[in-house]
Amino acid sequence: MPTLAQYIALHTLIETGNFTETGLKLNLTQSSITHAMNNLEKELDLSLIIRNRNNVILTSNGKMVYEHVSKILQEQQKLENTVANLKNLIGGTITVGVLPSISLVLLPKVLSYFEQHYPEVTIRLMEGDYDQIENWLQHGVVDIGFIAKPVSENLVFDRIFQDELLCIMAKNHPLAAVEHLTLNQLKDERWIMPKQNIDRDVLRILSEHKIEPNVVYELSVDQAILTMVSENLGISIVPKSILLHAPADLIQKSFSKHYARTVGIAHKRNTYPSPAAMKFVEICQLFAAGL
Image (tube, rainbow, N blue to C red; front, side, top):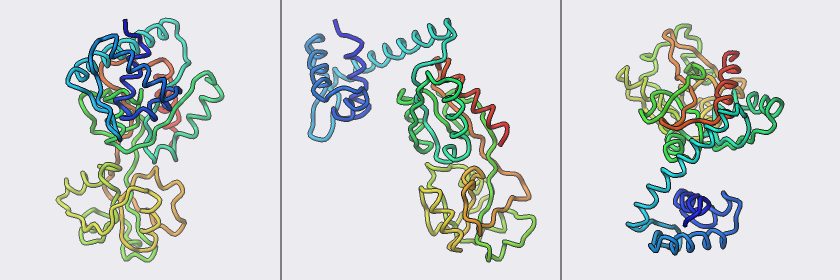
């Protein structure tokens, strides 16, 4: 009969797309993964995967087997979490999808707390954008992940904090002296925008106000946006959380109307986060209350 280890190897192989990354993720040699796949195909008497030069794809039979394997592994995780909950144990490994801005403002405090109070918990971090983290949650790559509303119906969302959206501009910008800034005052400006999969909130708010921004640069690195704005190459709207280490000469302005993104931690619906994962959410909420 196939073993749980073989199921895990197949599931991870399809996630990563190659034997080398699968071996690294499971702390096994590439030959061990190959051996596990060969044995699984022999046990089932089916061809499950097609090995190409650059990736691995499922056969038609493999797709059906993979669906059942995914369900088996989900049930296994539910069982482990149920047992841990019954024992009220906080330990093991949790994998967390993290937004770059969270890495600056909240994560260091939370990780420090866990190292001091729960040293038996191992926290693995995977930094990504909104789309990546949602995909990781849907496919079980991460246990929990930071995202912002709105979220998919397939996810359960726990609110962590409200992250105010601020307008940033160079100190010599004509609007730098304006006391009560409105979005309409920005409609003719040059914009330096975060890519949509990095931060959907700005485009959402501009769309609600029927503003089509003149985007001169679109970037995925927050620090690059801050630097270019400080050089007066354009303006931007960013979450307050990324301004922790902003250039000193950068002007940060609130709007006359409050705009914010709601940041939270999500997990896949119909799954049962471990006690360690739930404690992580609780500690994030605790520290976020002081932001």
